[in-house]
Length: 193
Image: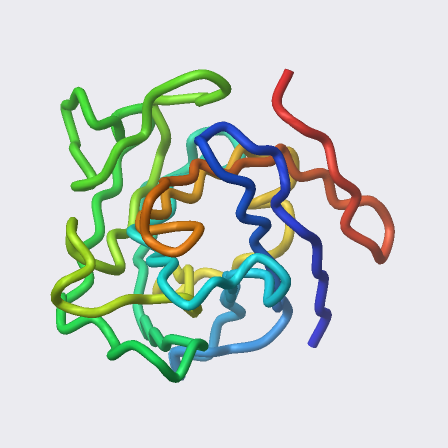
C-alpha cells in the first residue's frame, strides 16, 4: 500500500482551518479484488477550538472520469471530546462537472465563493447545517469502481474544497481548498490560482 499525505491550507472562508489529508492507494478496501483509494480528512489539531464541524468535501477526478465510481465506507468522528458526533446520515452526489450548490447536483453545502473550482465531480456531505445535532472533525471514505482498479492518477492534479461551519469557537465558517499534484512518492501542494 502506498500512502501520501498533505495539508489543505488555502483559506477561502472567514477563518483559517487547515485540513490534514491522507490518501492510501494500491489496496483493496472494498473486498471486490480491485484496488481502491481511501481518503482521510481531519481538522488540523492546531486549528481545533472544539466547535469546528466539517460539513463536506467536493472534488474533481482526473478527466472527469466518474463513470462507475462509488463512494463508500464513510466513517466519521469528532476530535474535541467536548461535542457529540453528528447524527446526520452522509450523502453522496457524483456527476462530471455537475456538483455545485447552484446545481444541477447540489451536495447540500456551499461550494461557491472566491477560490472555488466548481462545478466539481463528486460531493460528500458529512454533517448537517447547524451544529446543534453534532459535529464531524475527521472523515474517511473509499473511492472505488467495482471490478476496476483505481490508482493515484484518479486524484492527481485535482481540486479539493472542504466546507466547515462553527469555526473559531462557533462564530465563523471556513472554506479550505487545494490543487494536488502527486509527484514521485510525495504529495506536493499547488494552491488555487
